[in-house]
Length: 294
Ligand code: ADP
Ligand code: MG
Picture 1: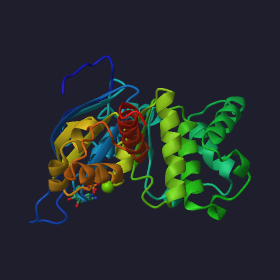
Picture 2: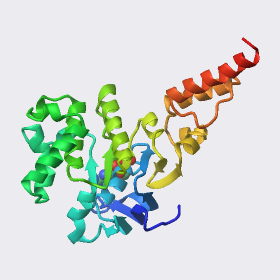
Picture 3: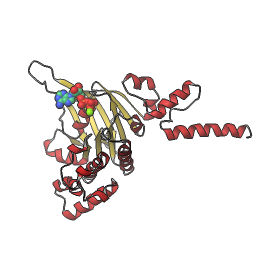
């Protein structure tokens, strides 16, 4: 991974983070171990890895929730160690957590979405415009007068995302934000992620769902605090043995692709989702029919 300072919205240089020893005589826990990582502005990066591999710790250093034990993290050129820049860094790189209940603070949806911009000291008319825009983009405008506690998990998560969008961040960090949602809620959150990407917002997504990772521009797989693999979804899932060795599953469509390959059907690595698989198999069948004159 090369450094291209100008285009890289996030620069992580030789980052090590150790949690302090829980008590005297015990050892400190190194959760992130000498990682360097450069994330290009506007890209969608999925972070995978088994539980305890250091994903959340890594992402928290980007949001300045944790300060490096060694090395540096830069967000839009700002060093997260600079305490004066902490709020500007959090505004630039917003974070969405697994459990939306921990992120919702107000009794009314629209107040919740307004919470962040209000804390930035933004004038009231602009706050109105920002929160309406954020609620429309996340499909919760119709729920704006409701209490967040009356909403489904997926709706709550969209309120939390709207609150982050209303801050107008350049980058949004999702830490297993779909893990507690039902399939429909997950789908809605993924749709928002796709639209953020289209608008040029950088997305970092920690996930256990391989089909979500398959949509990213780039995948990083962590193991024991280090980056074990990094590449495009095509590259990463083109090597199923390495993925499995790191304790991960394959996306369902790649699983099916591998089963078909084992039965002699040649399917390229670029096929990563069900739609692509169906299209490839149909496209593959049609020319044969044509050539046989049927
Ligand atoms: P992941 O998000 O991939 O599951 P984490 O970043 O949460 O991994 O954790 C990485 C390692 O750091 C794990 O071994 C975990 O036990 C340890 N760890 C995480 N949070 C703390 C904490 N607050 N105090 C001590 N150790 C922690
Ligand atoms: Mg985690």
